[in-house]
Length: 248
Ligand code: GLC
Ligand code: MG
View 1 (cartoon, rainbow, N blue to C red):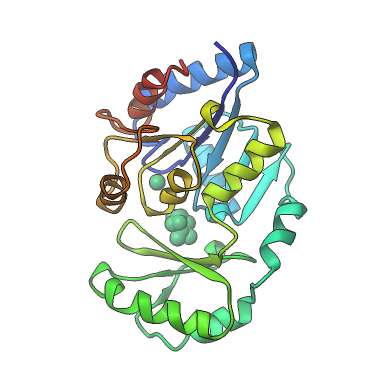
View 2 (tube, rainbow, N blue to C red):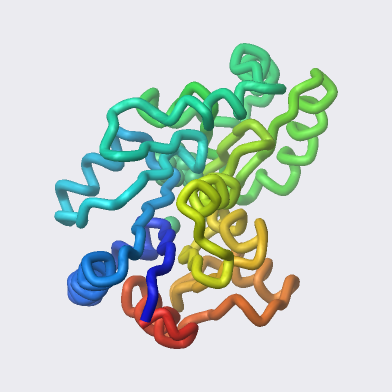
């Protein structure tokens, strides 16, 4: 057994089945102690909502945190995001222009203030109108010279972020920083904003058994051997996948 880099989404992936979460946390904690495995949470949540979930579920302390869909990386339990990462994201990004362009679309309902970030503008968009307006919104943003990306998750959440940013690119930033090869890196997820974790390179991927249709569809359209769709849900599916790849 040797160390690996473990990257996981939280809602409905790591969190969702309390018994399995307890078992997985024990396995990971032991692996970290014995082999130096690193644990990273990669979530769409802001610092405020992450803290809420951490308290609620008594989550184990990670080695790094990727918050706000990859737009903020926190290392060594610091309260401020990594500045190397923020610098990289500021190219081609202009929050004011994103706000003025998105204001032209009445179907976009702003998410609460806590969920808006320096490099993340988020809305709720009903699934029934999303397919119709997202392509228009995308071209309107790129016509104004912005280098941004639209991430749609769970049939409701729309995040607009710099195109150099997502959970996958944040994972690679940490992988390179800590010297893990992609074969010793594994990412776990259940919804649209996790596609970036699976699409970025050759890292091992675990889709939990309760993965959302948008992720399953993408998985079926982009088949590879280094991605595994688990039968079990949430943390139970992660344990199943870690065994499948021989990490545990
Ligand atoms: C979390 C965040 C929200 C985001 C969603 C999808 O729910 O709170 O802002 O849109 O994840 O990334
Ligand atoms: Mg999730």
